[in-house]
Amino acid sequence: MVHRLNKIKKNIRLHSEGRNTLILGCAALAALCLLFGYGFGFSSPWFITVLVISVIIYLIVVNFFRCPIRLFSGETEGIVVAPCDGKVVVVEEVDENEYFHDRRLQVSIFMSLFNVHANWVPCDGTVKLVRHQNGRFQAAWLPKASTDNERSTIIIETPAGQEVLVRQVAGAMARRIVTYSNAGEDCFIDEHLGFIKFGSRVDLYLPIGTDPLVCLGQKTTGNQTIIARL
Image 1 (cartoon, rainbow, N blue to C red):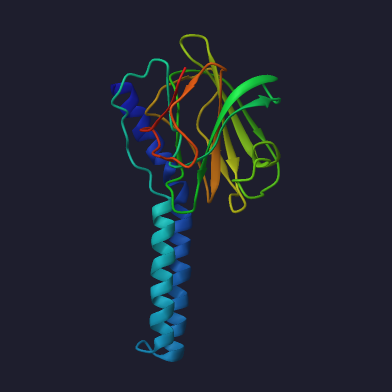
Image 2 (cartoon, helix red, strand yellow):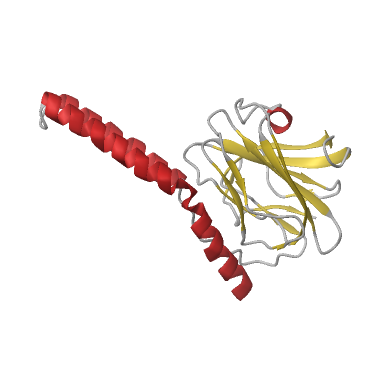
């Protein structure tokens, strides 16, 4: 547990990925408000409207960059937890042709602009491969996003020898995928896997025979919702 907490603290510092965005965004919105204030008067409807809209936009961005500390309280053996907050948009058997080249159970979670975009490790194991692939930036909820969009693929081998593929997929607004895992490292539930900036999805490809414990349209909480039992 000490190992997990230390790793979490380290990764929370890495989630200051949004620090520059928040600082620059605050400065830009403040400058815009001052411009309207001096131009139309600080009691004018124009200034008040711009101020309210600016505050709302900034609060949405702050919410997006939140990085909550969450500890999974259950037994982790054979368990796959949600790698992110969002909504389940795919639960089906598919042909996975980039790594496994066989049938897998795919579970995909779409993250809207209003979700926390921190990503968690979905299962205990060892990272076998981390690979980034360039691609398009079409809407993340489209089926083709998993294979056509910019993405990072992480392969985790569980202590029982099963392989789980985690794919961070960029969306229409996402332009940066951050992955903290490195090949050869041990990884554990409770650790942060990475971060995707602005609207995206995370796909899981699990062995056939895995028991899915979520359904289409279900909301998930990263590192809390149990996705499947291997």
